[in-house]
Length: 134
Image (cartoon, rainbow, N blue to C red; front, side, top):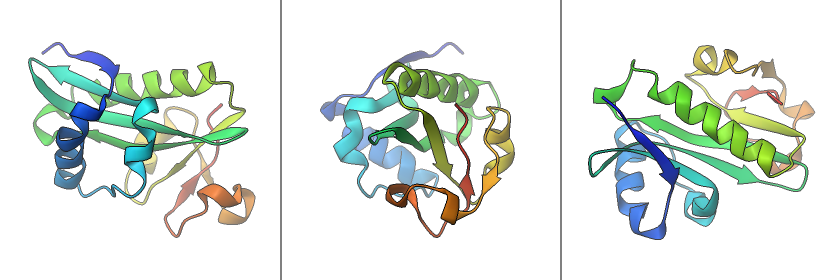
């Protein structure tokens, strides 16, 4: 199936919330970053999302989710690449990622494990951290 990637809008929030809940990802603070959230549409359904939480010199890649019925088709790859491109366009020097379960997926984008002590305080979290990909 073909998908269309685009910028999320406030009208998309309930669909994004449902998608993230279905894959058990947190919603905390995401609504404030809809301006840098991407979604993937198939027909009239949002089937994936990814957000870039911008900070002064870096960004946090977060809320990367693909509907379970659409996984394994390259959508997560395309959406992650688009989110990293968005971060580069915004001029950040690095992108961090917090994950406990998807380190293998994100390693193909250049992310690697790092300690919380090496990460800017704004993104420190008890989850596993991956170092910048940029």
